[in-house]
Image (cartoon, rainbow, N blue to C red; front, side, top):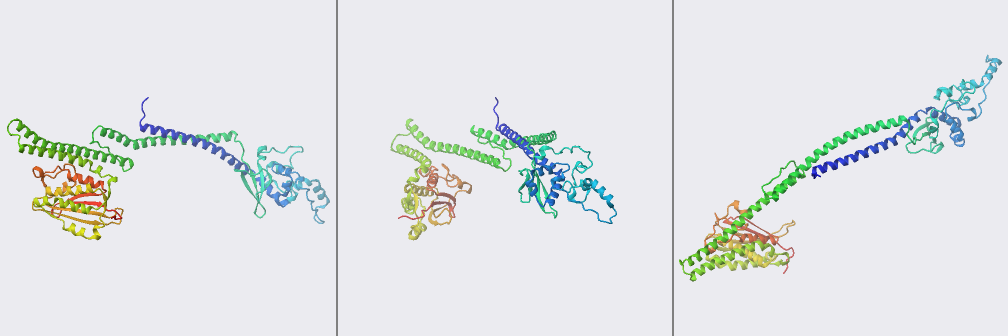
Length: 546
């Protein structure tokens, strides 16, 4: 089975998700249509019962309320059935008013009226004279009800157009929403407000939605709507799948490039770079990868250069020792005290070089947090200066510590100069800095040492700043960032003298490692005196201790 790529997995996952969402959409759409179709049908059916609403409104006026319908359930069943209502429904018909003398009708007219009393009462304009409670044919009742008087004797009333199921779903509630007759309202029921003579609301005619939608027309309507929903969902699914495919390629293509770039870097090709497209998170990730690859390439180049420098430093004393030994073996030079002294000097140089290499690698580890205790750095500096004073005098280099002595003599200043550190390691830093100035400052020059405390309101707190300034020669500006690298020497300007005066190029690297282990930092810049300025910065303790 072929292995799926991340892009394929993302596309398949999105496709399954979209298909499930489409199925849920269609299912809920069908359920919503089925639930919404019943109330919709009830609204249509109730709209066809205007004649019943008019009949109920006139019955309310005739009886002065709904009490008659509440107490006579049979009356309610007769009210919502089309056809002529018997007179007994609302009581006997009020007596007809006879014509008085002089009307011109005579007794013949009265007899004719009595002979046709039923027909005249159906056509009377008096609401009480109508057998259905005052509803003439023109009031909206079915045609069969208005023509009841002209129906042949024995003829059956027209069938109920709404059916028995419709009758079982009707209900009437009064103005206080209390059930008068019929079914109690339910959610989704259709409602028709009934109005009194002055237009006030006197109740509501309620029709419950059908429980089942099983007619052919209803099923055809559902199928039509579901087909429309299915086509709409299918079109949306196709569009979403196309968009998901494009997004998968757009988002995951940089991931593939990063994978390939990581493989090449792991194989040793540190010049590998990945394209950066856009400004989103993936673009930032690609840019970070390129920065990492560049730093790895720089570290590898520094490592190679460092190994070459170490080999060069070791080769010089070894070559000198080899020449001395071969001269003794060939009889060119006798093995006397002078030869032994020269060999001893080269061996000591090798020991010093190896020791400096080891110190530059282990300086940070030696100053562990457990070994750091509150110490006063200024007495340590004074002691280091005193131990190097004779060598500076022999080299004709003035050692100016007047600014340091004046600052240390002020109790208010020197009392605050308390740091957490390792006294032996700090003393070693001072000696290395003094040794560096001694080796690379020309005769007749001078070295000035000063100290100050810098206070800040930020998170850094107070800091002790020790400053070294020596005279020419200086260091070119482009080489200043590298003076703390291992085995680095600015040969063009601060040339190392021959013999024992030459250093290994590890002194400043050792100083940086120790200072960083103490939470400080050390920097180099051009000195106003023409040489090199070294700034040693150490954080001070907040609460001085005796």
